[in-house]
Length: 592
Image (cartoon, rainbow, N blue to C red; front, side):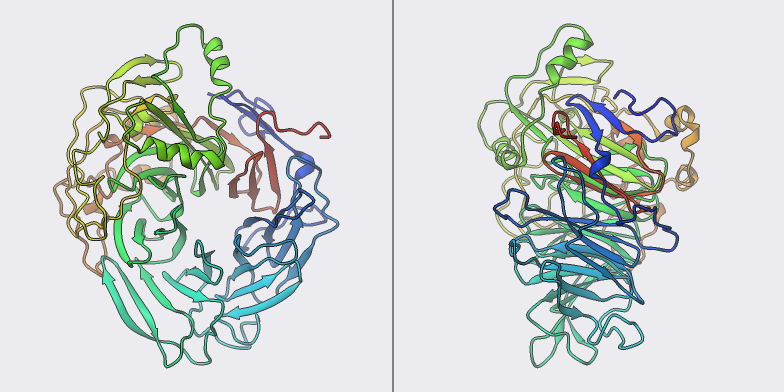
């Protein structure tokens, strides 16, 4: 575990923390907020969100930051670890009446030093396209007149905008989700029309439907998605832009082939709604978090839960992969003998691969080269408990069927020899050979283990080569065999950490459900949670490895709403409106 930083009291806010890479330090002079630096009274307001863009200016300081606090929206030059923040000189500041910003996203393709395209979603359902450099408002969507709700009804959707993102690789298409459970695809070049849209069914599937806008001339929205039940809280595109992961208040993660408009796979939370979602850099794993206080790791290729992480004491609000610490090593299995101090010294230089090489190195791992390649995925989470957690997803979790050569009790280090090229955790020969849509079901099989798994966070070791993002779509029926793992149950952890008691501990623990239940869900049919527990949709706590966080630190007074990993730092924000920069080890500029 990491060393305590910033004080020894459990309730004291930390200003630094230590991982095997070194010490992460809070840069107090790089804090962004409203110019008066007064904590924002966050009751009844929407979560503070942060967006970054690089405008590629010649000064070498092209990073820009946008954040919302209450009714206000700010746009600054972001100086990160280089210089102190100057809050007296925002590039743009906007105050809205009758509605509040809820989310925003920059178009990175079109951004220049003279112009940026920023989408802003609002609590009353509108979407605004603005240019904070030119200080212009280009267009309004779902609101033809203005941002005062009394002036004009929202003809497309009157509910709160929960997430807005540009479609990857597009300069004009963007996707918007609402608290109604609907998503809409827009084109900035088209108008929304002056009458309510009429829709025509395009495709219907397991608890989702997609409609096109029926009109004589092309108008927005181009598509309307209805997904699950309740609010659609967040969505995220895969790194290649081909797949879309959505998390909803009904507790389901749904992954779609975005272009084919087809469902690839689903997962159910252990309890309550799912609030956040993210993809691994290679698109092979998805992490979701929500009201069960857990982070859940889902395999895209195998369409199943492979691990859960327990460290938060309340709802998880953001999950994010650290592309800069996710590491790939082409080497023989690591062998080590010596003290724990020597071990830490050896590992201090491990895992420094940057984002521009991570993707290519991960792709090498998927080749048929017989040379062992080891990978560790780093991701983080923040929650309403004001805590930041960092997690390592290592190959003893990803590939538990590999022989284990050595165990380090203190740090849970497991080393494994490389299996034959092409081997995977699932005994399914078709999963790595699908070449097109509807090429067959990706059917996980039963995989028994004779070796007890570690609970968390081992250091990397070599593993098999696996396939990249598959393009096959799941059939309606999923094989329901659940891999049985020896691991720490939630009940055991409750006894050890009684202060973390939560309603989930008595939510579904008494429910018995056969793992042989069919998982085919009928369209618009409400799924009974009792029938999903114990299946591949929602394995029991004892059926999958339980991760422990590398670090779990209280870093704010109010609930945390932002976690973004940058090359030199990581950025967090809380509901009081303070955006904090944490310098990575060795990245603190001497001027600070």
